[in-house]
Image (tube, rainbow, N blue to C red; front, side, top):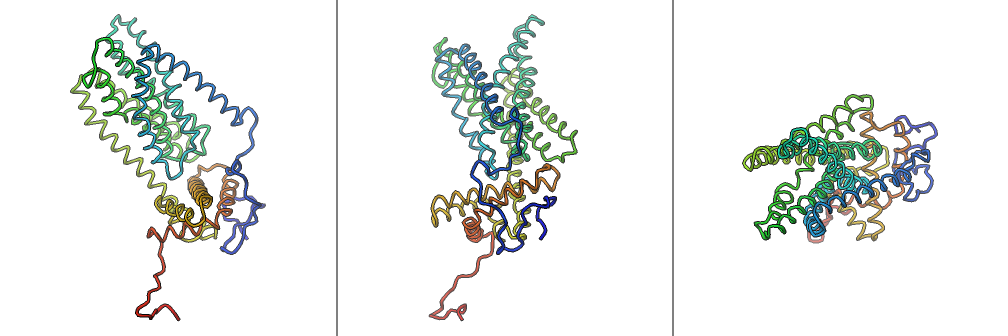
Length: 443
């Protein structure tokens, strides 16, 4: 019997071609062994990297929060913190919704948020302050130094600092970075964290100004700043950085041999992000209120709509990838025929988990959710192998995922088949009907 996985080693476990055959796999591994993990040297281990990253981000957090508190004062810092946190859950929920098909690990998105809030914000506040002072000393014009810094220096510094988080995840978490959606989500979380810290600074300074001049209510500087930054344009920083994320997403889709494309696409996205950011800042500092609202209506809103459409289209494309790849595994006997139809529908997935919970309890629903996650990862892995981006360990990773699918198949397969029929994605046999005691389906 031949292996289903292309390029599988001769001693790999055979893949059944009928549902009645059992694969020659040992018992299911524990949760820590769900994913294939090649051995690494100690200095490259995840524990060492995790400790280094957490230490770096903690130090950056202490420094940036101390700097912001020094500029705003304690009361201004607390007011800014309370107001700046309000748009964060909305933005994070939107990006997590977009990432529902194959959710990125929480540690990745939390790293992205923390990098934006602490590391990128610290680099930005130090570099921008230095650049403004240097321009002011060179030109002997402090007012123009602030304008030039906000229009030309800040976009370059801030977008580069935020792009560093995307680059790190692209290089060191490559397995979790498979396409456009991953790039958009990572960029969105990074920019949300950056905007959070920046809003603390702006809102805290506005509150201090109001305290100095005795302003309060809707006419205060704090209210105006909150409206512009948290109500009118909370998506501004995510919009800029998402362009960089899209560049990395396209680079992730490029074949491994296309190294030049993998470099140029992220750079193109970064330059677009800098350009849009510079236009946005320049409209506020150079053109006045009319120019600001003109850029907001003519550029920012359409760009936000276009990128939203692209992100949703990419999410639907992921579902189409599942429906296009998994039928091959169904033909090989790994999945029931209706399972690819259910797995390519978010509603059917939810129905399957609910059915398992009602029928067998919470543990069954958890098993179905795990099955859906493994099947999704398997579909994307094989799609990357088809495009030449899966890597040399593809056969081992494929066998590992098939292993875990088979261990949960007894519970998950009936639930997904039921969900496919209930949601209308698969044909369901007709009900047995009685007509005055006569049933034509009975023999």
